[in-house]
Image (tube, rainbow, N blue to C red; front, side, top):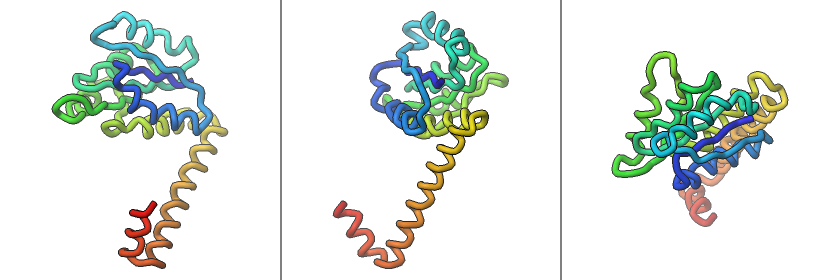
Length: 171
């Protein structure tokens, strides 16, 4: 249901976060390596056939020039989520700007540098807009996040800042 495409196998440690999120929500996904610069014909085929393969959303990750998400967005009517990868001397800023600065009519939703987990959550939210079961899983996940924050706030109030921070260091 979600296609994940990376420009290089060196992107796999980062994109693992998207796989983790999609697995958590029970959303089927595929994972592909296809460089916009080294194998543009492969990227073209991937983008053009995404709908026929039953995909609903595509997550595309790349570093440096990071053209992959934009090229995929140009080739498919599906929503594309870009994950900028921190690579090279600019720490991912180059990739972030490449992915975020798309021309009119070819949008790419962009998450933070190395923000693959959030890309998976965003893909789940997009799918959840039309699938009540996925929407319920996303809502439950967000409720759990809220309970975690409330529990931390309670521990902080009970222990004070110094004891709270000491207990965090011991974990």
